[in-house]
Amino acid sequence: MKITCAKNELLNAIRFVAKAISSKPQTPLLAGIYLKAEGDTAELHGNNNEIGLICKIHAEVERPGEITLTGRYFQEVITKLPGEDVTLDYSDAEKIVHITSGSADFRLLSMDSRSYPTVKHFEGNLSFTVKDNVLREAVRKTVFACATDPNRPLFTGVSVQVRTDHVIFAATNSHRLSVNNLHLTDTTKTINMIVPSRILQELLHTLNSEIPIDVKVTCSYNSLSFEFEDVFMTSRLLEGNFPDFDRVIPKEFKTKVHLNTEAFRAAVERVSLIARSSEYNIIKLEFGGNGVVISSTNQEVGNAKEEVAAQIEGDGIVISFNAAYLGDALKIMDSKTITFCLNEPLTAARIVEDGVEDFVYVVTPVRTAN
Image 1 (tube, rainbow, N blue to C red):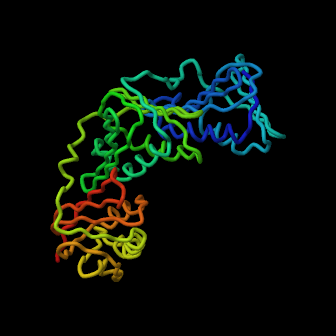
Image 2: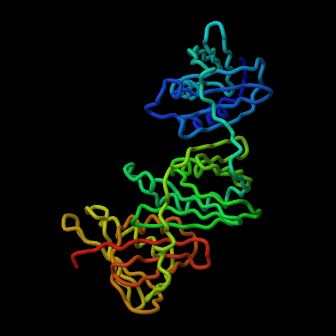
Image 3: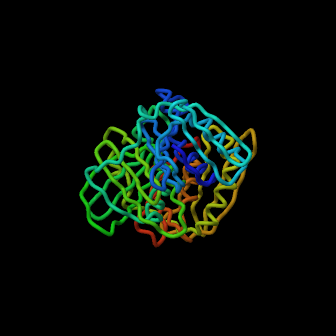
């Protein structure tokens, strides 16, 4: 195999597929990056048997073929090369890849490409196409709410329920719940999945086109894939039954509070500087009159208090929350105003973006000594 390509394009592809390489791979081959060259394309693979990534780049292919190189050294070498172009020349007899760029000359030992578990495309039980900006928004507004505790694997993923004309994304760590509806332009079949948050986080970072593009989503009962432009991403699904989150979303409220999103978010962030120093990260909200007083106290640090104007419908209420659970949600809300819906100091609250029907956030309050 012998190819020449742009160094930066190769480096970006290596960095992308390297995200699927585990720090402690099950086998030495899973520490490698696979590259196959034919026609005018170089296709790179990274795989850890849970997540598989493919990235294609343009290349001048003098001799087609395939190689597998240790991902760590491959990335480090390409990063440091001085030239704008790089040539990879592989000798089957020596099992060595000759890498040249500018005045630099490297020779790296290859791994066994024939045994590498290349990432496979699959037909799945159903597929649908959605614009990347729409998919990105659905992921962005849910994946942040996932649990991070590996002892609760079910909650480390996002529930993705495909219905005939829409897809429901939902994530929870049992203290907060974020739900977003994505509408489809074409009808499809139905399926329920729990998608690991890791693949969705990678998807979120990768979907960055300025002009909306189509993303093909393929679903089965144990795998999911995303395909767009020169990228293919696939992941195994989490096993289990996601809880019925719809029943925990409050439907009626005694108090509704209308707030300016940016003003409320900024105040919560400032008061949270004190809250995050405490064990439980608590901020208190006092709704009444024409505003809400946000406060936090830490005996070892000090205290903070700030008032934000609000339009309140119904009874006043004093309620406390984990500051991170409130702040995380406010960061992903884009509308100018939000509505905070409450009942009692110890019952779940709902936050919605005004003018946005497809998103809802539910957060459980914290019991305090007062």
